[in-house]
Image (cartoon, rainbow, N blue to C red; front, side):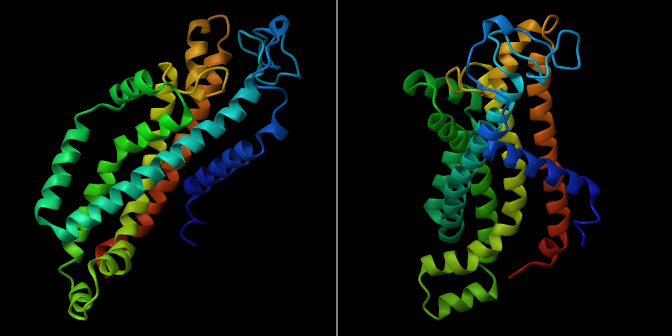
Length: 280
């Protein structure tokens, strides 16, 4: 009921759903081949502009490729990288954070120091290093963004574990002889998930922006694979003659990230009462 009364969250969810549908059915929804060059149709403006064509609703790029088709297929890259990188960061970070918080001692100190070292490396610098050594690929980009985001999850999970392990229900489980793995999996993990859900939502938005930034710098997927960041890079030199080349991918990134943040704001507000009372 609270979600239904939150208009921004409903709009954000609708935009996310449309983006997911577009990415899932990209071949069927695309008006043309996103990688096929049509040099005789290069720099065709959007259909409502003078010289536009209904066959290319959002125009074509410098090689005659349909912009709408590349936008729809580029959504696949943004969503896949955003979700997969957050999944990698979440699994690694939550696992290490729970172990460090529950065990304490040298394990906790080691995790915090490794996390400090990780935070000293900017994401773009790490992306440049990995791309120079391993080359540009979807897997490498996911690993780079996942490796750069695990520290946030680890710190939150560690802090929650330090608090929860002093609760009575955890002490009772230990008193009954439950092994450490069982306590972490059955008692700590379910109580850590609610605050991490909020962090995950905002992390997806940040990861999409990071992917677009890496692609803009030429560190993303190799051409001609469509990517919103790469489309921005291709269109920045044609702002005056082909304004649509940079406008539409920029709007796509802006709208999707805004939609995810709107849903994240609702989720944070919805979980606030639960987080204040505790769920142990």
